[in-house]
Length: 247
Ligand SMILES: NC(=O)c1ccc[n+]([C@@H]2O[C@H](COP(=O)([O-])OP(=O)(O)OC[C@H]3O[C@@H](n4cnc5c(N)ncnc54)[C@H](O)[C@@H]3O)[C@@H](O)[C@H]2O)c1
Image 1: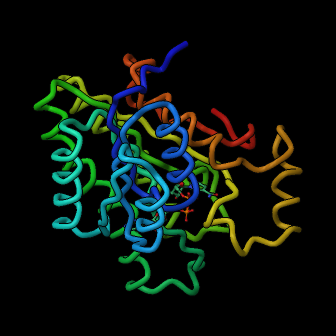
Image 2: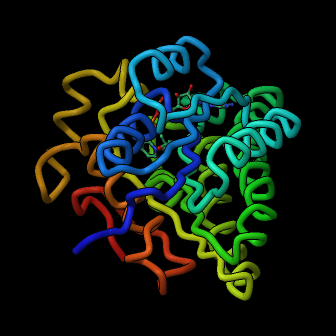
């Protein structure tokens, strides 16, 4: 099956690391254009120096509306269209409820939830003008099953992403814009740095497929949801977790 990726333009947030970086590599090798958005300036410089003309690094702190609007407009100007938004950027926060402060809570919500709202809202006018589009958000198993590696602020922010996926799918369907989310379990990326070997072994042991995810395994599902092959899928939150949890 051909996913029809060649010549399509993907706007990827969190492209400098982990799942986003993996999605970018897969898409570039399939002949797609990628606007690679991140707040990691060194990461963006590295993308600019090692990728070809199909990769366009754009800076944005996704919690900042001016940054996000400017990045989306720059990507549209560069490639002419934005077919798909793959939104991976987020921050992990592991403070438990005893340690959490209002400032930490607000920071996590600002990046993970407000940032999601801002990138979606910025993409919509471009997608409407071109007659439709695909939006893929990133939730987390912590919102489905609870987690001790991520704290309540992170889990709540990802629960908000699931709620947004459903509500936006209803609202944007008539504009021919699909909205889905991937829901990863623990995945070996920048976020996994600091997890002990013992912890990783325990999670692997509880997972039917016997290990944690690699970033490309999540990226491939997101790319499918953001491709024409998933034309008639919207409002879905797809678990990519080796079976540690399912509905
Ligand atoms: N790794 C896991 O175990 C796991 C599990 C469940 C869900 N997720 C989700 O997957 C997505 C990708 O995470 P990852 O594991 O690849 O992490 P990662 O840390 O490797 O990559 C995250 C990227 O997002 C960028 N970023 C963070 N805050 C930003 C901001 N305010 N503005 C712009 N860019 C910002 C970072 O610079 C980084 O490049 C996230 O939404 C994360 O919550 C990850």
